[in-house]
Picture 1 (cartoon, rainbow, N blue to C red):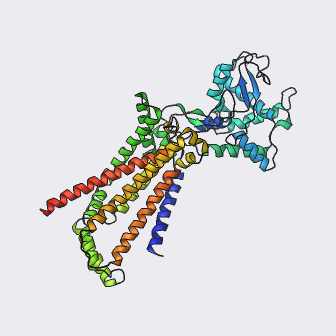
Picture 2: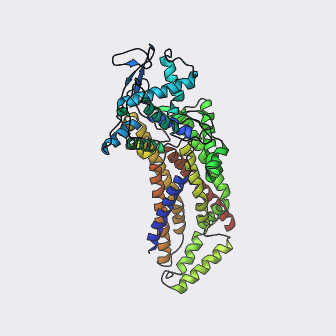
Length: 502
C-alpha cells in the first residue's frame, strides 16, 4: 500500500473513530425530559377555545368556559402526522379522530387533577386553567413517577388500556373501531422515538424551559415550536452516565451553562451570551490543553527551529529513498540530532492522542448544553447544525441561513490558516538552505505531511458543516488560538536562535 493511501486510510479511520466515540457519549436527557419533548411533538388534536365558536364543542359536559375543535396534524414533523403517513404506506389502518380526542380528554383530566387536586370540578375549570395544566403536566401523557425505576411510555400504555376498557361502557363516547391496532401503536412509538432521538440538549444546571421543540400545525393556542422544561443535572448524575461524561463533559457543560446564565443576568442578549460563553470555553480548554501538552508543544517548536539542520542532513543523502545505506545513515544522524536537542519525534502524535478525547467531550458538552438550544444569534440557534440550516429554504428568508453560511466560511478560513501556517513557516526557513540536489526522500516526506494536513483540514471543515453550529464557533475561536500560539512560539524561537547566534 502506498504511503499516500495509508495516510488517507488513517485519516478516514480517525474520522470514523470520532463519529463512533461521539455517538457513544451518553445523552443527558432524563425520562422526564424526554416526556416533555415527546409531548411537544404530540400535544394531541384538540384545539382549545375560550368561547364557543362554529364547529367547537364543550370539553367537559356542562362546562361553559372551555371548548375544543379537533384539528388533525398533517406535518411529518408531528408524531401523529408521521405515524399516520407511515401506517398508510404499510397498509395499516389509522385510528379515528375520536380516539385522539378521547386520549386528549384523558390527558387533560389527569393534568387538571395534578394541577388543582383530585377534587377539581371539571364543570368549572376555565380556559386559562386548561392551558396552564397542559403546559405544566401534559408531559404525563408519556411518563409518570411510579416504582423505583419509572419508564418512558408507561403512562401512555395505561391511557390506551383505559380507553380500551371504556369501549365496554355504554355512553363512554368511544367504541372498539375507534382504537388503533397494536401494529399502529408500534409505528407511532417508533416514529416518536425517532423524532426526539436527535434532541440531546438536556445538560442544565437549573430547572427551566429550554429549546424550541415540536411543530406548528395552526392550533390557535400553540402556533409555534415551544420551549420545554428540562430538569437540572448534577455531577453525580453525570458520573452515572459514564466516565467521560463525569470527567469532562459535565464540567465543560456546567461552565457553558454558568457563563450563559451570568452574561444573560448581566443584561447581555441570549445569542450574544451564548457566543461569549463559547469563546470563554474555547480559551479555557485550549489553555489547559497547552499546559498539559507544553512539553510536546515545546518539542514541536524545537523541530521547527531545527528544520534548516534537518534539511541539511536530508540533502547529504539524496538517494535515501532507494539506497538502504544512505537511509540508515540519514536515520542515524537524525536520531543523533533529536537526542542532542531532547526532542521526541512522536510528540505530535502524543498531542493528538490527548486532544482526541478532549475534542469528543467538548462536542458532547456543547451538544448537550440546554442553554445553547434556546435563544438565537441573528436567528441562528447554535444547537442546530450548519448544513441543516442551509438546506432549509425557509431559513434563508429569516436570515438564519446567512448567519450559518458566514460562520461556516469564517470557521473554514481560520482552520485553513491555522493548519497551513506552520508549513508556510517551515517553507520560508528552507529557502535559506542551499540544496545539494534533488532529494526524493525529503520531497516525499514533505508531500506526505501536506497530504495528511489537507485530509485533516477537510475532515474538520466537513464536521464543522455537519455538527451543531456551536462547534463551528468553537473551531473558529480554536483556530484563532492556534494561529496566535504558532506566531508566539515562532517569535520566541527566533529570539532564542538570535541569542545563541551571538
